[in-house]
Length: 365
Ligand code: GDP
Image (cartoon, rainbow, N blue to C red; front, side, top):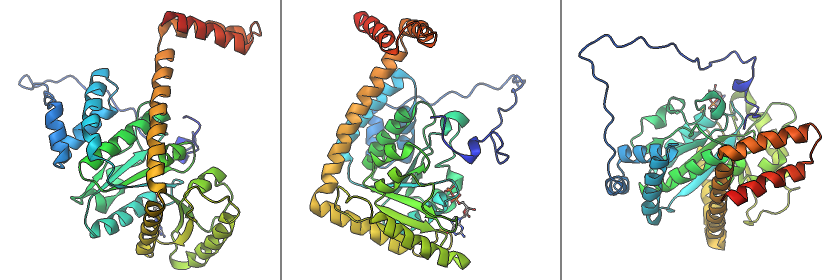
């Protein structure tokens, strides 16, 4: 996922960037010993800690989920299996919007609103750009000032390494751990520009699209697919002299939504205006989300969708592992390079070249 349109990814971007840093001088203090890593608790201890809501244990387990080490992955899977029976009891809400739409400000405000009525909230993120920047621009604690100091909120930035599929799988597994730890509200944030929405959509119950008004033709530039996925569209920054423009955008979105085919859930997506910063219309947005949950729980769509998602992730995991096994094989890699050159030189067709490599791989298994 390198083709994501992020202002931060633009060569000409002059805002905050991550520098590679300077090399550290050697340690001169003879009494200094390297900090030893804390030994890993056993799977049983971790699971027990998670079920008790111990945030340190939860964080350590999430780190294992995100780890690239095979050994850590094995432990992580054991923990997940044990947490699975205690998961599922949450509202999973996906939140998307282009950079600057006000996702972090809104999550901060919505989050506090949700926590007012008790319970716990986990904020996770899927940020495909982090592969390039090696650092996540989403889910950063400092972006959500109020929530980050709330004792009932758990904020975790996007896992950074791997393909979008891999990153998304890790977030999906983190949801299981958070639910087992008693987080009954889960927000999954993503940047509204690429395929990451599809990944988030496949792990949440409700998908919220944050839009802005006052940018000219409101509907331009929004991928139809993203609008079709949305269960609710909210127009942020409906404050000050922006209110009229927000109302206009609301009307435009409402009429555009009428042109879309009915949703699988039978729910008609709603369009609301609010201001995340000035905290206007927050309760209304949350009420809309509650109405959605009541509606889909009653008509059975909620359960069906969760089952469908569980199946989707089973196949996604198989696909990801098969792909990794194939592409990580050194012999396959060498043969691929050779066949690719032949295809480029017009000496072999794409199909026979692909068949050569696949035949070789299957024989090798
Ligand atoms: P993100 O990139 O989608 O996470 O967006 P941010 O939450 O960082 O917001 C981008 C900018 O919009 C910041 O300067 C915010 O202060 C501003 N902003 C966010 N929400 C509102 C709002 O409701 N009203 C106004 N006027 N500004 C807002």
